[in-house]
Length: 347
Image (tube, rainbow, N blue to C red):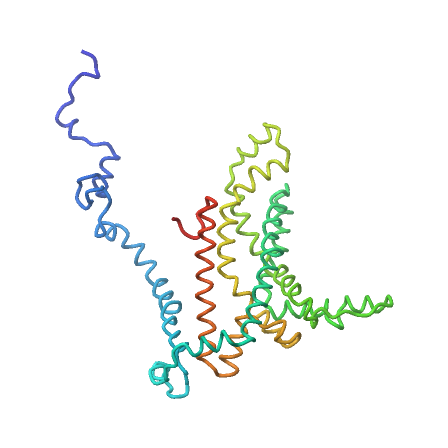
């Protein structure tokens, strides 16, 4: 009789493989305790298994609820003639402020200043989407092509450094370069030309804002794309090189497909953030060019709510902006799904 046909002893028959023992211990096997009919773990078993991780994330969840979701309840002032001076307690002020229904929203849609802010916001968004968004991708590809690690690290550090500068410092640097008394204007005057002041020109203000954003934050975006490039197996580049692909072919058929999921995710997030184009940056330069060219939705809400004390009207404008931004995120994520990408969340 061959060895394969010898019957096992009772002790050997009762033994289980390590995989079977793990499944029984975790309740993963079908019909085992703690699992449903489909073999999935019950909520009680999963809670017992992951209780340490849940306790670790509990403080973060509490902070998110406290500072991100509880303030959403304050949007009720968009439907009120809110007066914060009724009481020292904000909740009491909300409860005692009269409701006006949709009056604040009607005022918004009839206000030409609101639509001017919407127009300026969209212009800045499209400029930054076309001119700013591709630059971190191109810089990441350029840095990744550098052979020497030291040169690569120094280049990345130089590009990343402006991210730590405040907007006050960034605007001061641009003022010294492109202002009426800046270096660029002085050079033009020394050669017999009229000086230029880009900082106070409403026509060039959108390009100025985009240039400031590129200089300050392009290095921050490089990090994400370099991390995605680091996950590409070197075998793919070697196989492409053996097939006769040159550097451009390898970048087109290997590098860019590896970056495609990250690009799709960041693009969805950028579209959802379309109506937020830089509050502090624009507020600091609003008086230089005037509200006609520099007023965006964020500064519109701040000016009417904080400066003019019209809190209900400002809250209504902010609520409209939030709802539209949510719709843009959902629409962009749907487009990402149609393109075969995951986007912000799966289907």
